[in-house]
Length: 235
Length: 402
Image (cartoon, rainbow over all chains, first blue to last red; front, side):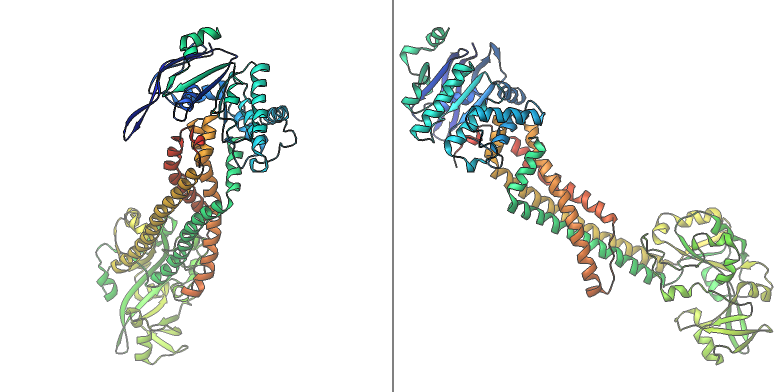
């Protein structure tokens, strides 16, 4: 298993009382899978994604990466986990506005290596791979939404992660561009054997996953894919 | 793309913010430098004026009092002139001007005057060892003025060091000149020895108005005292007096009575204290206000950059990287603001000094270093809390929509 979560709960305190965004959820995600998570707003899918990526600490439960438990309360360990093993693609692209496309990728590479020349070469290669070789010195505001998302995907791949997490990656794109981005994600999954977990509202986007799960009130909804069965099916 | 490059890019990206932040630091440092430049020059000017009050330390024979010295009685005790050499050859700091004197009250006709033997510069020049550091009034200077490249020549002060005084020439105080109706070039007989009046001294309102100044060695011969003096007047630096100058003098002249002229010394010390306090108060205000300004600026910057910081945290940057970026930014602004503030403050002092206070202000280069230290310190202090809080920004902050 690449990722395994056990009895995961994330509770938010609200003035009306405590809300379990993720409620005692267990899940195993095999290496190389393309998992799509769907569900209504507030179902807990983004919260689950954040926890999987080491961006958010759960209230209780465990997260294991390659059968090794990650200390979710240790800042350094979580940051190292993110930089080494996880790539993120966000709906809002999450690019630094005053850095060029190349530099936006280089800041991710810089976490692991201080070799500026090698980092620049790698960043340009990634931009070429996502079809932006003529946009390497462009700033985010000089790129279209689709191009910005492709830069974000290139950055997510910078450190060769095992796991790529995408939160509504096509949420800000028109249908044509959405397909482009989803195709790239599918290629990454197929050609690089990178595990992709994508949260989406779009049924069309969800179809790109080879495993689809649905959340409601922080729990797995799909009766045909019970947690253990899901894990079993992938094995 | 190193963190330093990232910091510089961000600074350049938000130019208007950068300019307003730099302006805050520059103005703060400029005020410090301007005030300090002005106060240093003022201190020197005030010190010159205070030195005009005269010597502030008296070395007297053990058995004598200051009253004895001024009364100049016939039987007033004396001590060897060799003590002057002991003072000059010592390396005690803070002794700016040494003036040995032999005084006796004598009669000229029916007038009682105080005959005072003094040492002119020409005789000092004949004893090279006495010229060390121009200590015997070779170059009169403000004794309490802070050290600096420029000595402040002053006409009244220069009077204290008399260039030449021929063996039978004398200077006379205004009171005596008036009573005896003497003018420059007049002849004057004292104890059967004829003197020529070389100079009439302007009125001082002190006992000097009733003095006749003649060459020390001539007076010694005339009075038959041998190589004795009544007192040695010293211009001591008031800060050195505070630091125990009197004790050091007593160590080399153990059988003398060494006293300060209290009013002069206390005025000098009080003046210095006041100047230092004013500078300190301004420094505290600037550090306080400057620190808050920088803190406020960095905090506003952090709030504006929450998403960026969230992005960096998301892709694996540690908290220490965020601290580094923000503190480095503060240091860069501190360096630039410190230099700009120094230039602004110095130019303001140079321009405003003569116009408002009649004092010519020149650049004080050591203040550049002081400006940098203060500016960088304020910037770092001001950025600590915002940087700490920025480190707490969650890595998913970039997902929050505007």
